[in-house]
Amino acid sequence: MKSDVTVVGLGAMGSALARALMAAGREVTVWNRTAEKMQPLMAQGARPASNLSDAIAASPRSVICLMNYSFTNSLFKAPQVLNAVTGRNFVQLGTSTPQESEDSQTQFNDWGAGYLDGTIMCWPGNIGTDTGRIAVSGSETVFADCETDLKILAGDLRYMGSNARAAATLELAFLSRLLGMVFGSIHGALACESEGVPLSEFLSILPPGDRAIPLIETIHAGSFEQISKGGASVDVAAEAVTGLYDHAVSVGINSELPNLMREWVKRAQVAGYGEQETAAVIKILRPNG
Image (tube, rainbow, N blue to C red; front, side, top):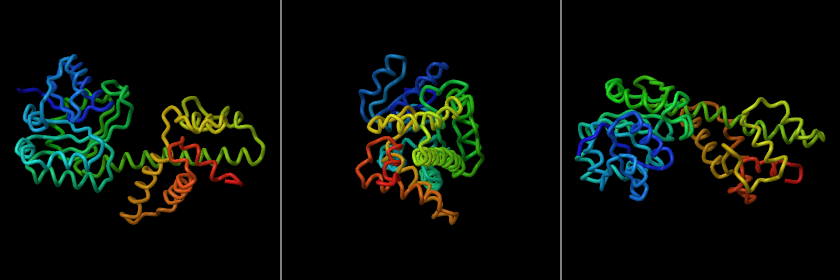
């Protein structure tokens, strides 16, 4: 079985990657630990692999889109998989710390494989369109081999150079900006409440599509049990701000802002709001919180 590219991991994003590649005429092999997730893609022309080693052996290059890098390592360390890895190129698209990205490059290179580390900075629906955004970093030679497929996946494809930590760092920077907006907006809503200014007035000055709109709407409605569009739970936010804090500490930069956000979400989790919308953090900041 020979194909142009293999996609490993068929969650919402991995499936979107496979569909976009097939739509562009590429021969695609797919593999997922839960075989049922391969069925819809098989119906669209994907070639299923019965195991990970066969999936890797089917193509000269593979795109990995798994839940985290630890899971990737646990799957790829199997002897039969390692035999298939040697001499092939891999692009891992996921959320990682810069250190995890560097460690993954070292690991794959030690296995005799080429490696690119990347991050997807868009929704599954944007994959395969001009609005798709993917940043990758690592070997220039591997990028040259994978560039055709990556350009299919994202109209906004950014090669960040040979530093394997670069793509993850860019995502970290974007996440910092997003979280600053989220927690800054929560404080803004708190200020309005303290002065008797209706949150509807706060909403009215926000630009269309602003990330703060569904957040403030949630606070205004008190609908904390429902995750807002494009939002996340307090527990998910806790992982994100902890990642920002840990990175700051590890590289010796100022950690005061991520530490403040981390303390807020910790208090919200202790109060039992972990599964609620991140906007629920306001409840522990209120005078009687």
